[in-house]
Length: 531
Image (tube, rainbow, N blue to C red; front, side):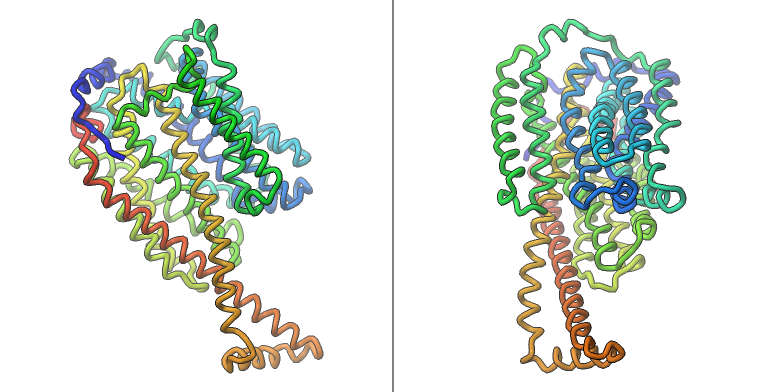
């Protein structure tokens, strides 16, 4: 992963981005409305995560079915994100965003009215697919509408939204479900969604549609891409929980994924107007930024998953308690956004990323000392380092990836860039779940070897528990054995969480060590902030 800024024609690539030297207040307000729409789309990935039990009860769904409330959204969104570049060139930014925001709002309303799990899964998939177009469209607009000297303000803003929304999703979801009902997870989108749709229709005038592109639209490429990315997302989501290829659906969709990938890459390099233009990866800055974005996806979505699972399974927290505990990271990101913008004007982006990765690694290293008794205050400092690290990393990564591309390539590149973060999250969650399961089995086996009749400590603990349960009579011994078994399992679970945090520490320290091999982008100094 090497990023080169020493590209001879880079200044030419940077110059068109400065074309709208003065951005009118109307355009600025329109962009902020779009950012709010992106916030809603990213928020809805995680807003249901702390409230799945309540949705499951409300829809009378099984435990296997309820996970699809989240999985269907992710699969559909990951297909739309790279497709959005082509669609926004065909329809224009204005109409692309109006359709995305309006469709997302309508599907949010339908999700709230769902009466069974089948309806919910269909509505969530449509919500993710239609709403997914908002995310890369905002990133592309940030780097085409605003001149480079505005990026120290704009880049922290979109970086904040991209990282803050999934982080506070469980918090907001927990509050809404606890105070009202699970229906409000979706109803909360209605009024803001209508506002964003109408304001975008009235105010956005960034570019013009090019309907001629529809004549050469690569429909077969779209089909291959949907098969490739959709089945890949499913395999990564469901594989760890279903013993991977032992499950027939995972095996079949892995084959579909491989066939879809072959067809997609063939069309990407042979079609006259490919559905996704992969040539953006020939730009070494974009390749490096996307690679870092992939790894940041592992950290962003991985920890947004790990903390609630630990608090729920080990500490027995409710969705509201989990949300309150997770709020620390979100608050830190919010407070760090202006600081990150200021630093991006003054500092080499590689140094910023190094500080961010190091802060992230230090936070996960602190978590590797996890015990069953850790609660809000023990998790307080690790979450601060996580929030600070994410925010400081995201700004220079965005700028390195998109800040030096010519404007005509940014719409397409933005879709690819956002896809890498989502795929990083999907791969990260699959790896984390697999490692958690494998390490849990290993620690259980080791603890079982130590907790046996030959160990006086274990026998004493069992006798003590039996005395506590003596009111149960003949069942006292069984209750004591079950309690001891649960204690052993809980300790093994905590140890497996600690192992995952240690591995994440090694991953982010590795990124710090890789930074000296990356060349500083010289093409757009404002991409690093100092223009």
